[in-house]
Image (cartoon, rainbow, N blue to C red):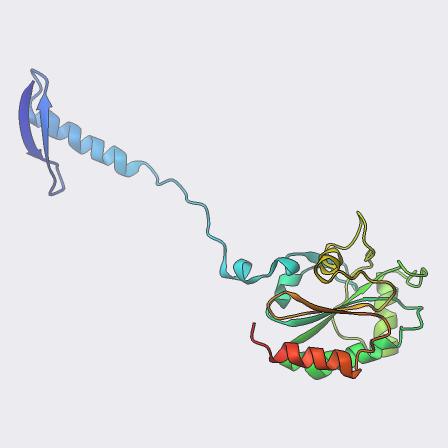
Length: 219
């Protein structure tokens, strides 16, 4: 074999090589140029897409989607990332049903500061929510003027069919709903702050104080 040095066509690169007998420099130059063209024509291997900023910013607790009460259109909870959330299981025929009024008052007063009340109707306790979604939505709006987000009826008691949000909140706080209108407070960082039983009224000092503290905290 004969040693040679040559410049790669179209580049400033000089390569050292040995040729087989009978292989001319002109032929080698042509082969090198063809090789570079072929290499350039090979598409770059696609890299896995990096998580979007929105996905990365959504806490694990909110990585769920639930049907909206009125029309069952899927609603991703990630849209509430960075908000303070009050998650409540509700019912239409319960002694605590008038708490809807207080919950809507909280939503209206503290909504501009970042509070969102989320209502989840359930028939788990005393079968006090037998209505379908449209009937529940009409009842809540017509009776209590409810405007905060509400979702389709679901199971909130611990078990294999439990609403996954309530399952996580139960695990995080160590307290499962014992009746209708149990309340969970979630901070802007997506971490559960507290669990409040049915007897804790929405506009009472205990819950209002916790909400105001959560709103004031930095995420």
